[in-house]
Length: 390
Image (spheres, helix red, strand yellow):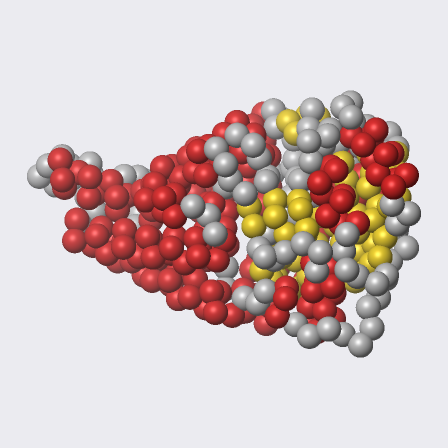
């Protein structure tokens, strides 16, 4: 019995799917061998002053471990600035105690949030204004840093002559909700972003900047307008990276999984809410591009396993040929294995990839709907409805 297309209104062919996945395999292998680690670079002749900048809002469970890891860097000339962004928990008290213990820690109190600004962007703007360094490293309060991180990062930045050096950290996942959702991010980057080509061409559409680790040359940061230029963009990191490239500056993406650890979210609900805020914004609110992209993701990663399930149960779940579906599933599993080897997420998650993709497609739909309705909320603040681009 012949099956029916998974998305009958979306024209595609199994051959197109296999071509796309094969291209992904080529990109993933190139990234695996070409994306360098922070520690791969020789020490420079001089170490410029660095300002490490951390916005913090209600981070009492994270802030001490993060700040202590930053204050114990084996780097000769740096300062750590943390801004308490109107926290209602013990974040402020913890920071005051640490400031009394470490002389190179400065704690700032956040000014009232002006109209038109996202809260974190306003906090980072204030931090940049108070910073004294030639280099500015923005990182999050839920990160942990190895003692050599800053020395390695500056060595990499100077060797690459990068105006913006960004790097993906090791993402810790403890609950099953985290394990099923968060690895999709690393899988997507490693499988479909040709990093070496993106760095060579300098195209904004081929860039991904990771807010957990952004090391700017201060002159470039100020030239692109800093956080004021992206004050109302939900994914400030991606927007800043694109501005760097648009204005002819040099962007580099490296691997910091050995140097920086982060636990983005602590359960399924936090992960869903976090990505709901970001996913549509990553596409610059391009409605048609967004819809087509997630339809294609659904077809490429959900239709082949559905075809195999239908074949096993003798049910016409889809018209994707089972023989080609086997090839597609094998290629997808290979992509997940490559990503897992670099990002070190639990191998058992690989076998559940259809569940992960299905969940993320659901989050993408939720992101679209919540953004249109102005329902997106983060850190207790409602996010304004953006202007859509068709």
